[in-house]
Length: 278
Image (cartoon, rainbow, N blue to C red; front, side, top):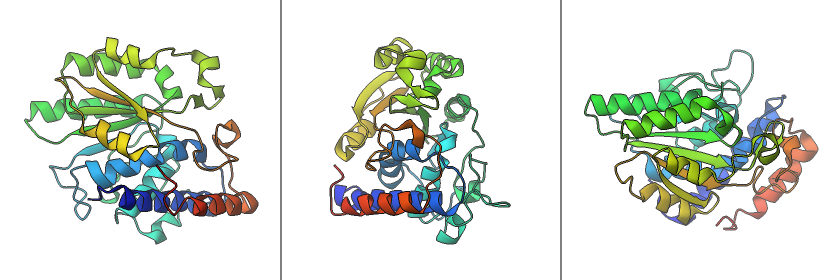
């Protein structure tokens, strides 16, 4: 596993480059803005945190990751390719007819995809159930799930939070991609969650709030203790992070990355290749 920031920076660059490439080549709209806000933390999770055999994706003892924010699956595909699970040829089929790499996750354990989902609030519920199963079966694997900012408006998220705390699931980590935006605009204007960290504390979670684009903070949060409770990492992020015309621009929540924009995005990403990532 990569634990050094230099190695992780290279992996993050590779992941983001693949995301741009897939978004351009698929010929249709992609949830690219939200994929860029979560790419850093997802790359660190897979490259430095998960107990996972990339040559045996169905190993029973593996840690499980459920992408509850399923519409941004392009980031997961790019990370799985960086880990050697998906091939570049498979990435070429993204969102094409007959492809196994759909616009939302479809369960495919040989490809490293643990669950089918897309309806917001579904993945976190599934992940908590898997974590509870691990407890009942006395298994040592951990379960991680990543949810979105707008997804936090879903009642099922908070139902799951109550159950996870009630069950004492100290093998369960929720990652919140807290980019302050959702499909229809700024989250505070649609349903203001106010002090989101305090809400999770009140629901019985151990809470860590970090800069979701800072490798050192990400690693520290993953390594930090559960204190006998489920854990949430609130990753404060920027939608479209690192691409100037995408940053905090909700037009790129779901958009087509055509030639001119693709070239500009690649140029900006290339400028960050030599260590501009934190």
